[in-house]
Length: 131
Length: 212
Figure 1 (spheres, rainbow over the protein chains, first blue to last red):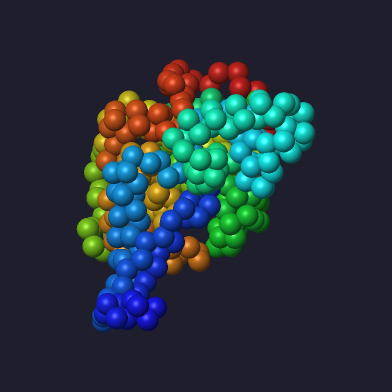
Figure 2: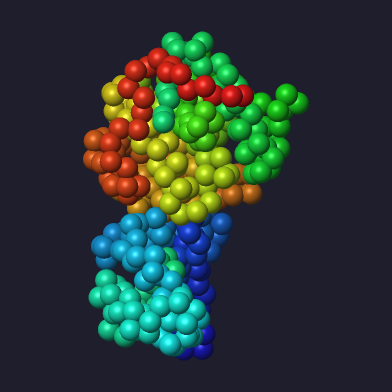
C-alpha cells in the first residue's frame, strides 16, 4: 500500500469476477483522488466486467470452467493427487497402477496443458478447472 | 427436449405450464427468496404470464427441468412496467422484433455438476435462440444479475447495458439489450457442446407424458 501511495495511488476499487464455477479474477483500479461515489462505482463495476471479458477473449482463454476439458479422467486423478503433494510412487499405490503409468499420465497432462514441469501442470489444471 | 409454448398451442400444454409455474415458485420464492412473488397457491405467476407470453421449456424423462419466458416489448413487460429506470442511460428499446427474456431457470438437480448443469442451461438458451431466429426476432432485452455477464460474454453474445447496475432483491442487476443472429446461436452451441437443433420442430405437443 505504501508503495502504491508513492505512485499516487491513494484509493482504489476492486471488482471480483465471479462465475458459476467460482472466483475467477479481479479487476482493480486506483488513483490519486478517485471518484468513488455510488454512481461512479456502479459504472466501474460494469466497466470492469467488460474489460475482463475483453481481456479473456484477447488472451484466447475461456475463463469459464464450462469449456471443453482436455485431460482424461485418469490424468485428472493423477494431477489431483499430485496437487495433494503425493509422489508418483504414492499415487501409483493409491490408484493401484504402476509408477511408470503415473509418470506417463503426468507427461501426457504436461503436454496437453503446455506445461514444462509437474508443478506448472498442476497449477494450470487447477486454474482451468480441470481439477 | 425443448418445447415452445405460445398463445396458439398452450391449450395442449396446460399440465406442463402448471408444473413450470410451480417450479418457478420453488426456485424464485423458496430458493432465491424473492418474497414479493410468493403466492398462496404455490404457483409463481405475474401480470406478464398472459396470452402474449411465449414459454421455452426443457423436459427430460417427462419432467420439466428448465425454462424461460419471452414477452413482446411492444406489450407491457417487466422492464417497461416495473423497472423502467434501469434503462435510464440508453432508453428502453421497444419493437416488434425485440422480445424481453425473463425467468430463465434450471431445476436444482440439473444445475450441480459442470457438465449436466451447463447442458440443461445451454439447451434452454439455444431453444430461446432457435425460436427467435425462426420468428425474425433480432434482439432480446433482459433484466439480469451481474453474475450472468461473464457467461454471456463467454458465449460470444453482444450485451449492451441500458443503464447502470442497481441492487434488486439483494443482487446487483442490470437491464441489457442483446442483438442476436445465426452467429450468436453458433457460438452458444459451440460453448455448450451442443451439436444441432434442441427444439421440437413440430409446434404440437408430442407424447411427452409429463407428470405434474
